[in-house]
Length: 89
Image 1 (cartoon, rainbow, N blue to C red):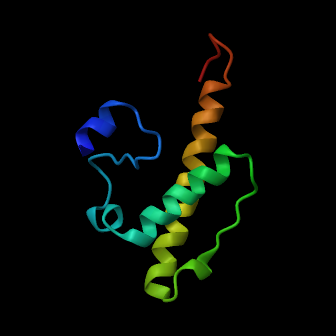
Image 2 (cartoon, rainbow, N blue to C red; image 1 turned 90 degrees about the vertical axis):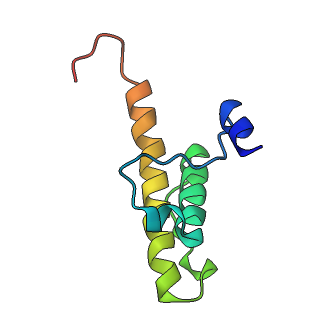
Image 3 (cartoon, rainbow, N blue to C red; image 1 turned 90 degrees about the horizontal axis):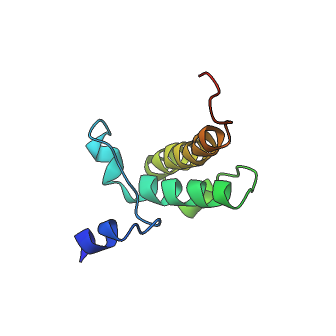
């Protein structure tokens, strides 16, 4: 079932590369932040990290890291897709 959702391009699935920290990718707070950061950026909202969703500092730090990463990933992908064809990098 999980593989099927990946094959169908479900955008809600968090994609990770081989270089990602396994501890982060399996951390619920990090993944929650990643999802919410991407969602905020896709909706055009200003970044606003709601760390209060997680009670402890041990959870707030990975949530913040995930949020910032997710937000920046969406902005970076938009910047790439907004470049005119043939523009030098």
